[in-house]
Length: 624
Ligand code: CUK
Ligand code: CUA
Image 1 (spheres, rainbow, N blue to C red):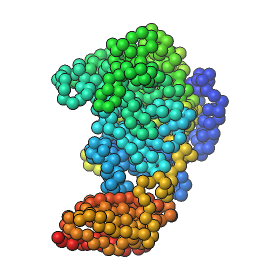
Image 2: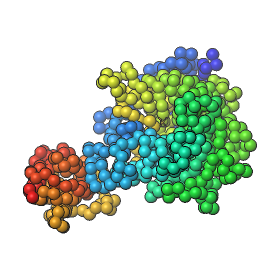
Image 3: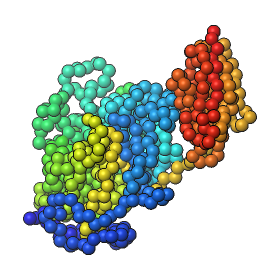
Image 4: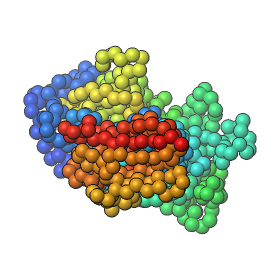
């Protein structure tokens, strides 16, 4: 069978595109692992089709030791982002983004409550694509950005504190799906509009006729999170990725039919990849070639727009087979690879050719046949691509240059397939979105787990599977099943050396003032408003008793004066829906109405010391 591949040949055939140190890196990674079985240089048909052999790759991290990588996984309809350590796949913490989370006090103190309120006031979101900011094409560990597909928003997570610090509600966009930075220096963040609606969607115009709908790409300033400009396109969009030098932003699309029903959306044989020429779009904005809609300059990037005539179009429409979904740029910036969920091939588009060719399909330089339901592609930096096969429940490893050299629809670029459990969506390799992927670990984010875990009722955990890809000779190896609460879609994996969180707050980073020991104040500022500023420490609050009147609005600001890491306190107020988490040197504020007379024991919910239970304060609400 032409699928049986001599792994040594497969390795040699991508030599031209490979740098010496990549070999060194792969060799070192494999050499560091204990108990590798003797290598089989010729893979059998079974190996190609089935699971990898058990060669004893070990992902365990001994007690007390740290993982090598941070992995940021989206939480899907949970609205959060999860932080895992890799390779152990231990979940370290969750970062609430569009949801409330009492364990972090997020959505309970005035500041985070106001941020959620300003972003639309919704209580949930649907995060899919967490992407870490880059400088010079490598992770800089400053921020992560993540979309909300449910409500057309984009959020920023400050990786100094692993906290959401900004959310923008994107005008003129519903269903923000893809999210990605303009590389190499994160000059813009792109929100990819999936759902077509009337633009603006304010009830005017023809609501019934989907022909009159549109969707936009939104470019967001990563510093102030303002939407700088948008581009209106034909059809819709789905996922997105940027070229590494900043010239293009690519989106995949289904529904070029512009239909409003499933059968209508799958009629055409081809949909497209859109290549947005960012410098040309910015020139159009500069020249005033836009319409102002809801405060945002919207440039017309539809096919018949004057800006798309002639030989300097702002958006290239490149037809690719049926309903492409995953779109990702190779680490060397040569190709953008897109795969259609309803076609067994991936399309390899030569980025340099996009602006050169007359017929946009001539930029497609490879179309390997990979298997059923190819969705997303990740990279190891050694010339291989790894694509999830949703229908086949497999990850396929293939050779990118071989795909360019082979005939369209050839299976010869396929090196190996491994079963995953079950039906994978995204997969992500360590540092795959950078110019220099690590090439050791890959995570397949599977949509179904079925029989893999103890049954827990009708909702099964998702299954994120860890696969070792650092050994080209012995092939991919499935190392671990990792259950997850619904529903991670995508992830970014970043080496631990590139993220430097602070464990104690720097008061300079906070807007609220610091209340030192002995400086607590309680003041009635008006007839029905009391303002409290106090500190907390082991094992007491600045006030052990606070007396207010029924109906008072109480603004309570608390500074944790601890300087020791991991010494958090909280302020929980029974029957008032207040829970402030206050980390060392942090100040938080919550405002509530004391509307029921009585006694309320304010307590610390974060277990802090032997006298944690005694860490209380009495709130006395006197009747009117
Ligand atoms: S994703 Cu959002 S539907 Cu394949 Cu990037 Cu899951
Ligand atoms: Cu402070 Cu528990």
